[in-house]
Image 1: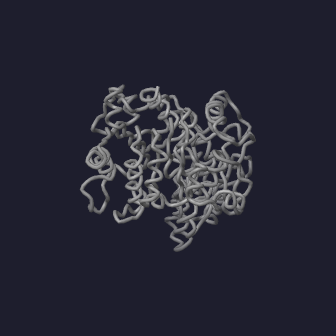
Image 2: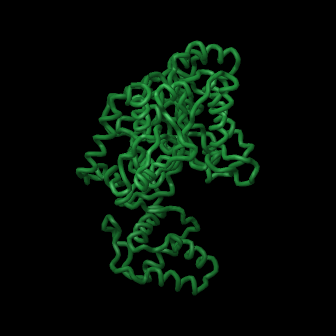
Image 3: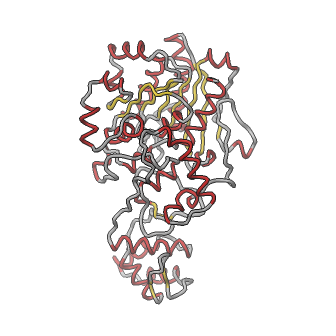
Length: 463
């Protein structure tokens, strides 16, 4: 069972498929940073950045493919001569998987129909027509199933991609696919995170007919399984219901010396399923460096924990910022009204004294005022919200800091011996082209979800 991983990122998708004994033919990733992580975990250990550049990136394109990882634009592989080479050399590939960059489709972005990133799924499809695999899987954000906001398209991008697989390939290559649209929440597959993503799974028509596999026109959602007890042929059966999930405490409690039975169960699930598919033999926990915050930021995070405990709106800082600007006493009264139920003396989660009175607390709030109120404290008893590429908007449930790379990786279900390479984070204009560790984690397909898909497809197609 051979596969190609396009837009592979750090390798979450690949890790799930390798755990089900699928063999990687090659992967393609544009970012040298994310590629370094993929190479280090699946191909050969990387000592440092220079080591990776000398060992791999100095090779020519065909040599990189031979080493099972090409670092560069996917379009570079679609020249006439290389298409002929790939078609001949990789004709035995059974499956193509990938998650084309989603910024152009994301509901959080500008969703510009002229965004060059919206062409990348079409290059993905060109690879499909070249290889003609038995199975195709494309992952993307939920926004790919909605039309652009400015109304410049008649159909959602996902619908257009589905039609190409169903019709255009038949006209050009003599092969067509049947296509199932899925919306899968990683939470339902034992990932401690509320993360909904679109998966388009296509089966070559002759294989589908031979295996008696059918699809539906409508999108199937994993939540349907618990609400309607419904399932479709190509959907992996959900394992964890909304009342039986892993939460933040289950995922990371051992990292702050509070190990429990569900934490042990979760760690066993991620480490026993995936560790043997990684070439890194060290089982020490990597990527768990705590971020260094200024004293002002740390104290602000302490107050966020207080606000969370007393169910006080985070916008209290916004109100304080406005008061600092115009000294409107009505705004000051709003602050006092919001904190009226707090008991004193007031301590934080680490027994540090915060304030002895409402006047002291109000003064501290005014000192730490900020117009930004997107940051939130994580609820330790709930699953993580969707892990994003920028770590600054979520605060540790117990400590006045943001999360480590490893804590985020736990929420994504990566095993502890999967080591993320390159620098931890970046900022400013560099965010447009750099893919540091936090971004690698946030962009990944959760390995446990990928494994569930791989296991299901193996049972109905490859067994």
